[in-house]
Image 1: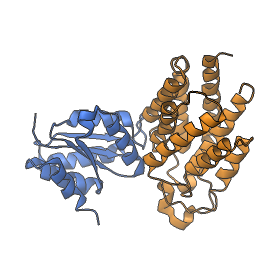
Image 2: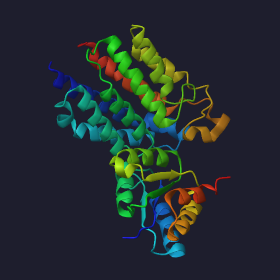
Image 3: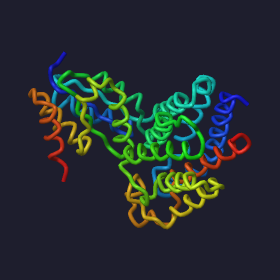
Image 4: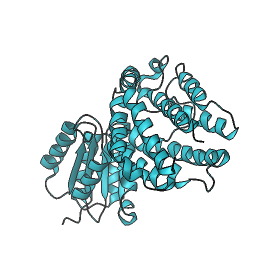
Length: 129
Length: 199
């Protein structure tokens, strides 16, 4: 398993989540654990705590996880998902206040160089106007 | 009626109320949100209905926590964590004596949970604008919570939204009832009606 920080992308749209993840893979490569969750339980637009928890599991790294979200519900549901993790994991997950696509690519780029979770989050959040 | 029967009856009533209001909630949400509130709430309460025997068999604190967790997992929008938190916090803060003062204190604690979850306060055109007046009326011993809740939901119409999706619209959110305030008012009315014959 990679020792790098993992990235999780949470969008209301399954297509946006997958598309942003594809961009990370192509631009940054395979060194960063990556998960994504998009759409509600029925595959419509929305976010699902279950799917977000599964994406965190997919991308899990002991170095931590940086989550990138799109709109309000994605953030609220991500916060809920993080709180439902075991405490020793929940403390290693941050939700970045950053644009989802640019934030994911920048965060993953930083993570691929072995940066700490705090560094990864800071780089993503620099994009905030 | 046993308490377990009462829990079953409440779940039936809430699910029927939300399913019956799906189109209305969707229409309200199409005006100022993303149009999914009706369908999301329907999915959540249908999931609760599917879990009814398991939920009703638990005592009040655990039944409320399980009901809340079902909403969190199944709703699929921001209303999942918000309603889920409301139910779970009601369960956590369930009073030793579920009389009016006890329940008022429990609801007050749950409202704090919803505020924290939504990073929201009263007056921002959200479900809190119904929950808080209902809690105050409950604490003051007032009757007719359904009417108080309905009026509080109506009172969100002239308010400009400053939290949630509706806040993206700025002044254009004025003139529409908040869908979350409406669904909360519907649930308050349904719970009061169901408990009416028993409490």
